[in-house]
Image (cartoon, rainbow, N blue to C red; front, side, top):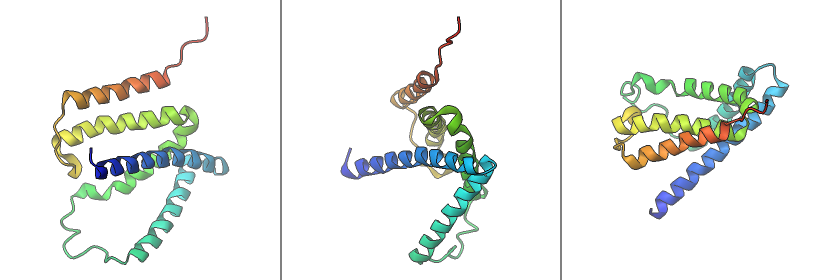
Length: 155
């Protein structure tokens, strides 16, 4: 693994820390709101304001000529997926706890990623499914089972 790859993996781990932190922070926001959806909305408003300021600072033009017509229809649903992910994380965080939530989310990401890579879906490069990659995915699934297993304490 080269230095660039190590830095990218470290940044990905930081994103993971951010995601699990975001779920906890937003779950606390829900306590002051009436619903998970309201908390998600407030979270997106704050995020949108921050991104808006960064876009202005960046100063790049919006939608260079021909860029909109070259996009596939599904390129527009990222915000929808983000809203679903945030709202569900807010709802699930207090139900599952940080570890079960995080590993379950990672498990879903890994399962989808195997297919996205194998077939080059959603703009990802095609990366062949190998026994090593499948084994890693199976370990994540096993991790979900171990983390979420609750032995029956009655009887």
